[in-house]
Image 1 (cartoon, rainbow, N blue to C red):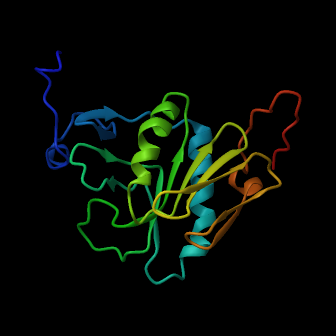
Image 2: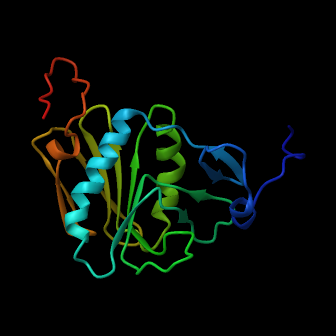
Image 3: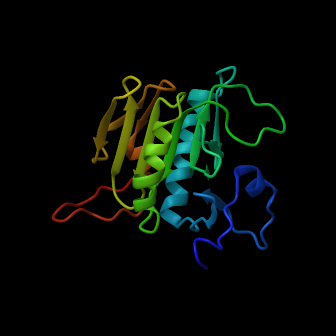
Length: 198
């Protein structure tokens, strides 16, 4: 299909669209894009992180973690993303579609999506004023890349690569040991290195 003939959806049209089957979709530059099916490592890491954040957020009066929560970009009517996990401290209201004022966004990388996550999603997440931290996680081996907002223009990038390290999420006051994040995942060892599995 040529660019001239292609129909680009708005977010409103995308949300009203009902595709056949049970695949999940994101809207990327006006075009629905099927999301990759998470592999087992992805699923375990996501479940572990959800569990680790539960104890931090359960007694907070308003903050919630949302697996697959949708994110609406400011001044952008042709992109609608669904990160692996989003945290907001705006109280939940029944009927909400997008996550309001996210403070933490988590993407668990895969070979088929990493380039898009880094080149397109990450800069767009930076544009959301409420976002304080963006976390990229490699599920096959220990690697966490945390982008922390310093001010309107600058971000600090923290990289963790060993199971003995602890990930500090200042946006929600959480500390996540990498050994627990990767618990029960059969990790790929780095070249010349043996990975200790919990």
